[in-house]
Image (tube, rainbow, N blue to C red; front, side, top):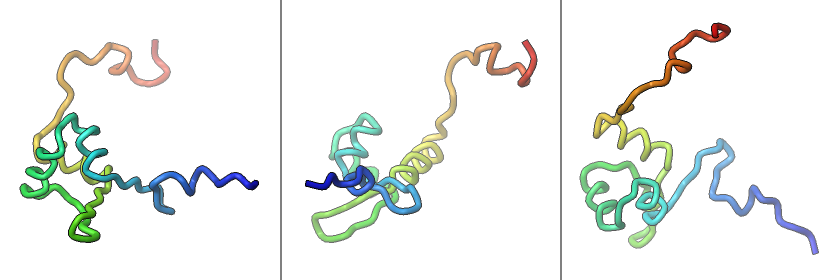
Length: 88
């Protein structure tokens, strides 16, 4: 029996974009499904394929949340990260 290619089992498009459902978005953001519904009402980018099927471009969701909630690094940045490449 021939094995299916792993690329066929992954929810990815030819361009490398990954799509997910409400459960995946909720897990990614650490929220419940109801909170994802509230974010959708607030403008979270999504594609409604049918009355009961909604998918999200996970990269767009990530960018929207960062832009909407002004996410930024909190805490110290190590000295190594600040030094230009090639210097020790």
